[in-house]
Length: 492
Image 1 (cartoon, rainbow, N blue to C red):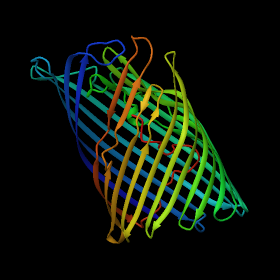
Image 2: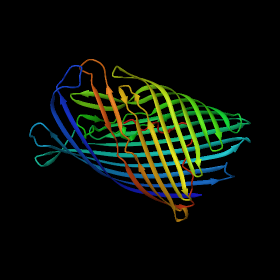
Image 3: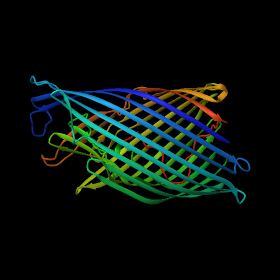
Image 4: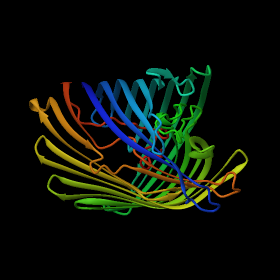
C-alpha cells in the first residue's frame, strides 16, 4: 500500500511589545531609589510564513500483520520573514524618538527517510530492524538598521547570516520474546550525526561528527490479564532547539539580549524505570518510579554588564532526578476518551562555567491531558492541556506555565480528504517567566526578571487530500535511543 499526502500553509503574524526602562539612583542593598530616567521602547512586528510538506508512506504485509515492511519519506520546505519597526522615546527631555528596524529572514528544508522490517521468530519471538536518515538545512539572515537623518543605516554589530547543516543516519535492531507470563525486549540503536555551521560576520566555521550507541532493555511480568509489573533501562539523547543555535544578539530589547550558541551539543540521559500496570474494562493506569541521569544539560547563563543583561545557553550541568509518574487512559463515554499524565520528581543539577560553580536542587511537577471526542463518523474534536510547575534553576527560578490547544477535523470526499481547524494556546497563557538572582560581591551581584512569549494565540485551517489508499497509522520513530518526547514546554 502506497499513500501520498501534501500540506501547504501560509501564515501572517502580528506581534506588539512595549518595553519600559526605568533607571533608578543606586541604593546599596535595594532595588529602589529616585527615578533618573525612563525610556519607552515600542516594537511592532509583522511577518509572513509559507510551508510546503510532502509525505509518502509504504506498507507491505508480507505474511499477515506480524511480518511486514514499512517505509516513509517526507520533504518540508518553509520560508519566514518578519519585520520589526521600533520606536524608542526618552520621557524626560525633548529629544527626537530613536527609529530602528530589524528584518529577520529564514529558510529551512528537511528531508526524512525511514524504513522498518518486522517478522516473528522462534515461535513467540519478534525481530525488528530499520534505518533512518534525516537531513536539515537552515539559512538565517538578520539585518538591523537605525534611522539617521532620514536614511536607514545598517548596524553591523547586529547584522549577520547563519547557516546550519545537520545529517543524522541511524540503524536499529530490536529482539523480543515471550515466556508464558514473562516477556522481554532488548534493542540497540547506532547513530551518526554530522553538523556544520557558518557565521558570515566572523567567517567562523565549525563541524561536529560523532557516533553514539543507544541500548535499551525492557522486561514485563503479567500476574493476570489485568495486572503486570515492568522494568526498563534506556539511553537517549535530546538535541537543542534550532532557535537556541542562532548566534545573533536580540535587537528588540537593547538591555536584555538573548544570543544563541551554535556549538551546543545534545543532552544524553540514562533512565531506569520500575512500573506497575493495571487494566480495567474502560481504561488503564501505569505507575512508574524512575531514576534519570543526564549529562551535557543545556542551561541559560545570565550575565549583567554595563546595564545590559546577556542571556546565552551552554552545555553546563549534569543532573540526577528521582520521581514517580502516573499515566492513565480512560474511556469516559462512547467515542469520548481522556488520557492524562502526571510527573512529580526531584532533581539536582551542578556544573562549572568560567571557574564558577552553578547548582540547584528543585522539586518539579508536570502534567498533561488530552481529550478526544468522535462526535459523529468523520467529525473529531480534540483538546490538550499541559502544565509545567515552577522550579529552581542554577541561576534563579522559572515560574509555572499552562498551555491549551484545541482542534476540530472533518473528513471529506468519502475519507479521501480532511479539513482541520487548530487553535494553539487557546488561553493565551504560554508565557515564560524567569528570574535570575545572583549572590556575590557588589560588582557582579544583579537581579533580573523576564517575562515573554515566543508567539501569541493563533488559529490555522488546513486541508489535506490523500492520494491512493488512506493510511490511518501514525508514523513511527522506533528503535532505542534517538530523540525522545519533549519534556516540559521549552526553556527559552
